[in-house]
Image 1 (cartoon, rainbow, N blue to C red):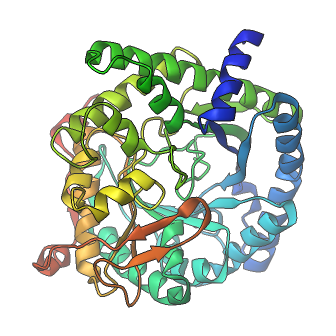
Image 2 (image 1 turned 90 degrees about the vertical axis):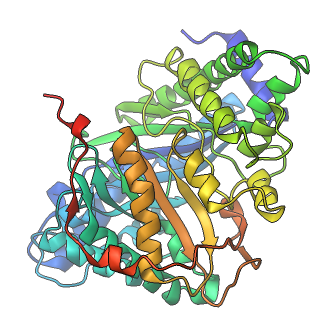
Length: 453
């Protein structure tokens, strides 16, 4: 039972500490939309999305007004389109992206995810068609997001798919060059992708999910920082961890309340609360600044990985006490362009790609919203993906890469995307070639500890 006093304490967080419900995301199963005629299948996709989720913006506004809770985004995640379109007789799946975009426009939502393929062990013909369609699909739509899962702890790493994605990312950047390569900001390459993630750009409705589901994402880096500011300067890490746990508990309780209300009013089952600390470009809403509050002069210096590990662990421990259904990615996000503290650390030279890779060993997701030089080769991008996927596979966690090789950009330039996507300084990549490594293809086998049966 969520009490009135809990709500009042949390409302203070909304008013003064940048706490928000980042998203209410409806997951929708689209397998029933399949048809040999691609136009019929695409129309089925449009109709089912609209029929299922048309009330979402209205319900979001109702809950936000009645509870005084800012709910920033309405989003939809659908069954990976490579599965939905597999029986359709077409070589290009862009028409499915157009159907998704029409549905988003009709309903009035912010993003729709699921232009996706799951290829961690191999690629079907449909998977290959989907992946080849990504650059055109993302350049021709505004709100559609794509993701590809190239590896898992159980299956290993599909290096053929990794090689393909380096080229796809470059093509996507080229087709959206007029907007700084923004298509790549809507494209995520995963290892160990989860089926119930409410955050974009990587959300899709997993095949283990039901007909439809409500997943809620709550975020509050500013709240955690504010709580730590009230501690004595030399408080031990035991006290720091306990403070973060208590704060995460309060944040998650509010997410549970919003999720339960949205579920009741929409008549759609509640799935999970994702309690990820997802930053925004707004000053005071930064994961980097939390780490600095622990005593680091700047994010990226020695000690950053240890501080982030503790933060991530304490957030999870506090969250699971507040809800029986915590899921998604749930932890701390470190997207460079969406975190003003991360941006500052890149500018002052303390935060590099190598350090970010180390940090992703202990937090949610991975190399996220990072601008790299426009002339970065496809094989280098693939190698970046392979490194990050290997971290996820060996550590049995979700990792991802969302990099933007902004056309015409060089190290030190600033790429602006606007809104929650923010802006990013272009970061250097290593010049030594990985081309022969990526050209080998095949599959890197699963680690020994994948054999659990």
